[in-house]
Length: 184
Image 1 (cartoon, one colour):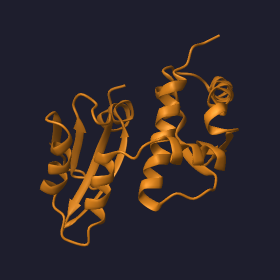
Image 2: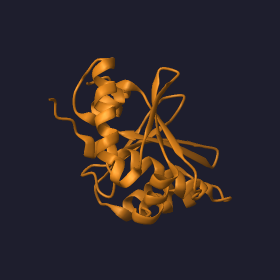
Image 3: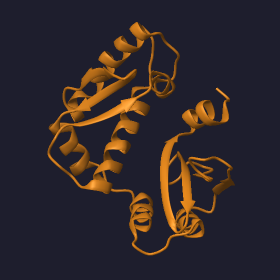
């Protein structure tokens, strides 16, 4: 029986749900997160075909059931959709602390005042002395930021800073390497 990194997938699912709660607030409803199959494989720590992935997700559902409840796993537009029931959403709300860093970043980006990339970088540097900042020439984002040592989080932030407005998309380092850099 193959070994999968269920804890990595569980943590990622929880982090995505917590980020959503921090952005739009908590509601006592089910919450869905869509994953490309390749991303799920990277989180689970192995490459596998569709049937193996379905089996791994069934095992993952059993693994997280005590905390998150019975997951609904479906396919949507070529992606795997993991739906966490209200019980699991409530668990994340009650048991997982908000990230001070992410909270400050979200508040800055939502600020009605003009926000520049230097402001974003300052938030990153407030939480770590090991911040990587790369300027990019890309139509979807123009900066890549992340914490070199993975603290306070291990995501890569693709940041668009334009005319005093900032937005971001975050992804795992493995997804960034595979999908953006092209090194899998």
